[in-house]
Image 1 (cartoon, helix red, strand yellow):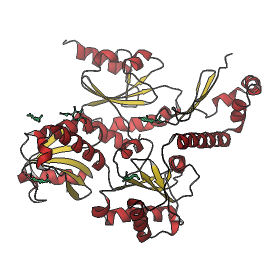
Image 2 (cartoon, rainbow, N blue to C red; image 1 turned 45 degrees about the vertical axis):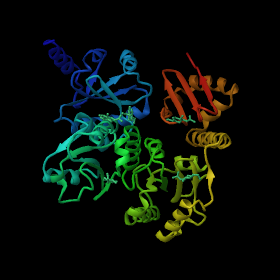
Image 3 (spheres, helix red, strand yellow; image 1 turned 90 degrees about the vertical axis):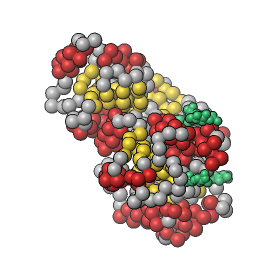
Image 4 (cartoon, rainbow, N blue to C red; image 1 turned 180 degrees about the vertical axis):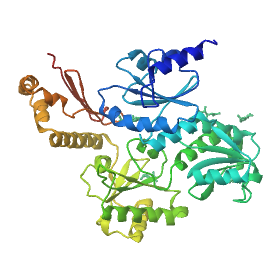
Length: 454
Ligand SMILES: *[C@@H]1O[C@H](CO)[C@@H](O)[C@H](O)[C@H]1NC(C)=O
Ligand SMILES: *[C@@H]1O[C@H](CO)[C@@H](O)[C@H](O)[C@H]1NC(C)=O
Ligand SMILES: *[C@@H]1O[C@H](CO)[C@@H](O)[C@H](O)[C@H]1NC(C)=O
Ligand SMILES: *[C@@H]1O[C@H](CO)[C@@H](O)[C@H](O)[C@H]1NC(C)=O
Ligand SMILES: CC(=O)N[C@H]1CO[C@H](CO)[C@@H](O)[C@@H]1O
C-alpha cells in the first residue's frame, strides 16, 4: 500500500503535459482513481466540443493548482478501457471523483462554474459556520446558498443533510447556530431552514404536521430546494432547462441572440434589463410562482414555441404542463407594467396557451426541429447537405468528392451534442462520416450513416 503514491507520482510526472497543469492519464488511472480528489475530462481528439473545451480546461487546472483537486484528462480513443470503466457515453464528459463517489458535471462549460463546482464537491456537503463574520463572508462570495439554523439533530436536520448531499453538485449548504445569524434575521423556530438569494433570506415553512411526517417532509423539502436553488435571473440553456422545469413554477424567459463574442444589441440589452428589473423589484410577489431567466440563443426557444421568434422576445413556460405563452404585443414595446399584466393573466389562466407535450405537438416539434436543423446544415455546408440527402446519387458524388477534393472531409463539420432529447450528431472518424439526426428520440428517429472507406 505504501508503494502506491510513488507509482502515482512517477506515472504523473512522466505524462504531465508540457506548459499545462492538466494531467494526461492512461489506463492505469482505473487503479488509482479512488485515491484523492479528481476532476477529469474524458475526451476524443476528433470531437469539436472537446477542442473548444481544451483552453478552458487548462484555465480550470490553473485555478485549481493550489487545491488538493487534481485536474486531468483522458483520451478515450487511446484508452477505451477507461471510458468503459467510467461509463462515458458522450464526449466530452466531465467527472468529479472522490473515493468511490463519482459525479458527472452537467453545468455550463465555463471556467468559473467548473471551478466553483470542483471546489464545492471537494468539501463536505454541509459546512459549519461558527462566526457571524464567516457568515458575512459567505454572503459576499455566494449569491445563493441554503442554511440550517439550530442544533444539528432531529428530523429536519437529518433530512436537510440528506438533501445537501443530493444537491451538492448544484449549490452550497451551511449549518449555523441561532447566535451566528441573530443579527441578520430572527429565525422563526428552534430549527429552521432558509435559502439566501442575492441579499434576501426566505424560510422553508416547516410546520408541525410536516416535521412529524418524515416522508412528506422529505418530498416537500426536496421540491423546495429544487425550486429555490436558482438565482432570480439565471442564463437558461439546454444544460439547465430540465432542472428548471422541475421547479413547478412558470418559467419567464427573455429570449436574446448573442453573437460569437457573447454580445447582444442595445435593444436586446434594454429588454433584458427591463425583464430583470421586473423580477428584482417584485421578487417577493413573483418569485413564488415565477422563475425568471434569459436565453442567449433563440434556437431552444424556437423549438419550444415551434416558430421563428424575433429577438428580443418574451416566452413563458408552464413547467407542469409544458404549455407556453407569448405576448400578443411586440415585446420590444412592452413596459414593466405590461409584463406584470401579462404574467397576471397567465397566472389566472386567462392568457392564450400554446404548445404542450401531446403526441401531436411532439411530432410537429420534431418536424420543426428537423427542418431547422436541415436549414442550418444547408446554411453551413450546402454541398455536404445535398450530398447526404441526395442519396443514393449523393453516395456516388461523395465518393468522387473524397477522391477529388479530400479536404471537404477536413472542413469544420464536426459537431457533437449528445445531451438532451433533440440530438444532432455529425462527426467524422478517420474516413467515415457519421451523420445522425435523432429528433425526439421517442417519436422520430432518422439516422443516416454514410460509410466511406477507402
Ligand atoms: C423520522 O426520522 C427520524 C430520524 O431521521 C426517526 O428517528 C423517526 O423515527 C422517523 N419517524 C418516522 C415516523 O418514521
Ligand atoms: C415554526 O413552527 C410553527 C409551529 O411548529 C409552525 O407553524 C411554523 O410554520 C414554523 N415556521 C417555519 C418557518 O418553519
Ligand atoms: C428522501 O427523498 C430522497 C429523494 O429525494 C430519497 O432518496 C430518500 O430515500 C428519502 N428518504 C426518506 C427517509 O424518505
Ligand atoms: C400550468 O397549467 C396548469 C393547467 O392549466 C395549471 O393548473 C398550473 O397552475 C399552471 N402553472 C404552473 C406553474 O404549472
Ligand atoms: C420525449 C423524450 O425523449 N423525453 C426525454 C427528454 O430527456 C429527459 C432527460 O434528459 C428524459 O427524462 C425524457 O424522457
